[in-house]
Image 1: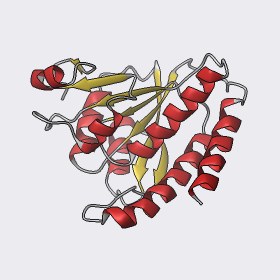
Image 2: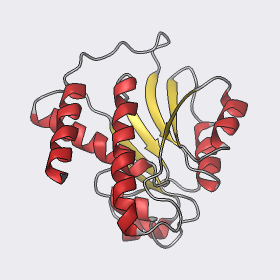
Image 3: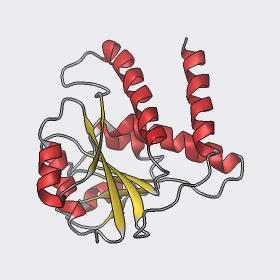
Image 4: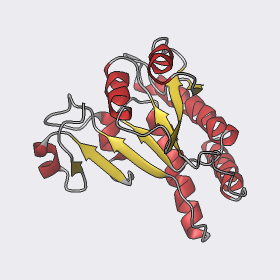
Length: 203
């Protein structure tokens, strides 16, 4: 079953990879998939996005199906926006055994998110578990593109949460080696993780 699922995922990703590149938005803005998490993750992400010029960037927001507040906050800050909802890979307190199935279901939803949208220039996330299957899919897709000689790719950008002072979050530990840019907000984390970029406090 696992092998069949893996083959199915690879076939879908190959189909995505081989599509003709979609036309960019009329404004010429770069397309970014922004992953939101409830509570503090969303607060930090929205604060970070305020620094972006809306004329140069077009955002598509991904949030968990159980997140009832992030969409309202985005609409209040940015006005009309595009949203995609996916089930969480793992709820707080959920057992690791049962999270295997929920992660697989989340993975399938993530594939539909990529299929429904034009190609993204980047995916931006800051720690919610919702970002893990999406980032892994983009990493696999980028690898396939590289092997087969396709020049375009989706950059994975991870910004570790402000509250992670001495250690990385679980999401950070998973994505540290595959992210194109990995940003931390405390200098001691930069010393522990050489690939990270220390840019100071971003919020």
